[in-house]
Image 1: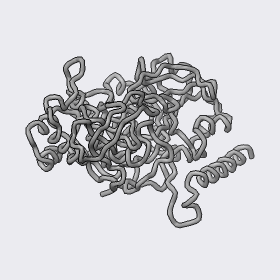
Image 2: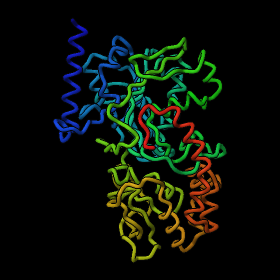
Image 3: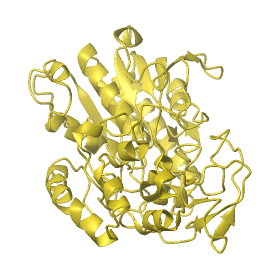
Image 4: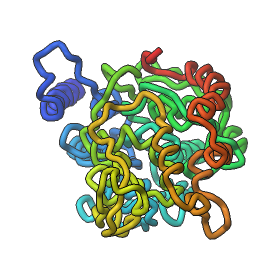
Length: 421
């Protein structure tokens, strides 16, 4: 009777949250896309009576309620929270180091995984019976949440602590494009040989990390055999040391155009920014401002020296960027906020900006170590070479095709949702 009461309560709770989040779809034929976190009845039984560690941020919501608050109300003991870039509450600047602290709203210790360390230590997981990963990704290789996922997965395997991934839709999951990362340029903004836009949800990506054995060998050896990933219902454990559970999204496919209910980070303030981010984040490695400090970061970009006949704007400090490029200086460039979402990486803006830039020797930012951050973002040094030597957009795109074809074959093996092609 008690279990039935809990189940009925969860069903009611989910229905209420769904109505709050997508009221315009309730009562018509359009199916509502529900992230994995909404399927409470599918994972609540795994958390009952356990000390739980949750990797989360401001996007970890069920309707208008944070996952942590939801689970606490259902009697789940959350012992530790892990936070990514921008922090657990999602307010820190891009790249800002975040220290561990105690969250004032919940009283729970928050371990920052974007500061002094990016991977949980053995001590961080001590006393935890099970882990939960629930975060909204945007589907670009240089968005650091997939790197955080890999390190969290590695730590869970090494500690032999079960992990539940509450999957969420990929807002850029309807195409695959860009150069494949060269391992010589591996970093926290690109750890695996995937294109810039990889067209997978976080759970699908985790499945690929395991299936392709891309984790370090010292981590892989912790398993008795390759891990089989599936939903909690019907999940086959197959005599593995480590247990991974995936709670899928409902009504989502890779043809979906999922509109994020919460901004995934301070500088991706709306869907225009989310859609253009994979194409324009390259400007972070140049002296062109990528639009932080404007109304539409990554959809607005430019430089003070570009022709004044272009779109004009002035960056100002905003939440998520205390000192944007060309702070309070008039810039000229482009505003793509009203344009349709791209279905490929659009290179023409990068090519135009480079061609219009007067001092091309100063276009790319060189770091203190003498390296170019542009190459770190691109995952190779070929794209910069192509720009400098006048390669056309067609030539650049053609140079990606062999790698993309090979990647798509790998990707197909791990999809949990119907593909776009």
